[in-house]
Image (tube, rainbow, N blue to C red; front, side, top):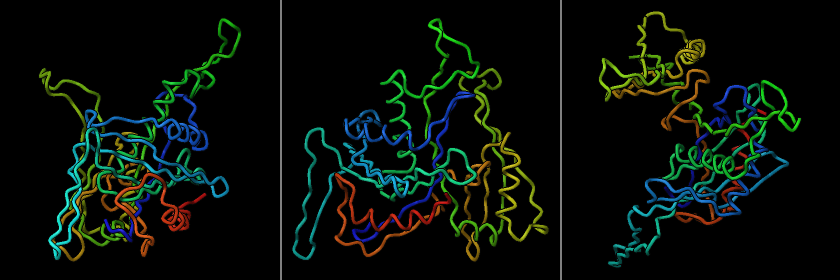
Length: 324
């Protein structure tokens, strides 16, 4: 990670609910929650309390319909940082104090305007920071909503789908805690490689109900993988688009697809996991991204507040990723 350059990965952020008929809040509904969690310093202990995550800062732009979050991670088991000047023979170990952790800060841009034609989905850009994977960003955002759900008994309420009245004659309500899902948008490199490389394997994966196998309590079903035969002589010109259509048609039964291929002009083989319904990636490899270069003043390893000049450089490129 250089001090004059940053990369941001592009994700589709979906707000979901696991209860049938539940009302799903908008991103505008969630912004005050993130603001409150930042203002109260709410922390999320992870990794058996060896690390802590929190919202370090928040910036809200109502005119352009987006927010920026600074998500911070303090990791007690991370190594001490070291600075050196070999020519001068200088080697300094910066020892962490009691209860202190190595600090990592990640800027996250989230649109508050829903993507056209895609319910509950918002464009999200996550700064690439060693130590804070997109899975941790997803966990923290979902956990903050869980905090709100447990703190406020009236939060995330909606009219009961079955209707009816309470004993007090008021309309019945129900509650459901929403959650956040992040799915990486496929990069042009991935699409080009699949269209022009050699496909070596395609399979559809279905999550199974937890069921013991052959009476062995320590073995349970997890997923079923359907391997597909490939006719190499009749592949369409735009293989990626065709595959996404096939995956989507089968997404009701198979939520994940796996594609293995040999990279054009190389001996290297790659396997990517894809969300069947959207065609987005389920891991960070080959996720669409943009770069910010020639950043000045230079950036530190971490930050306690949003870095304003980095924010201002990232905003135009982020807004270009939206379809609203």
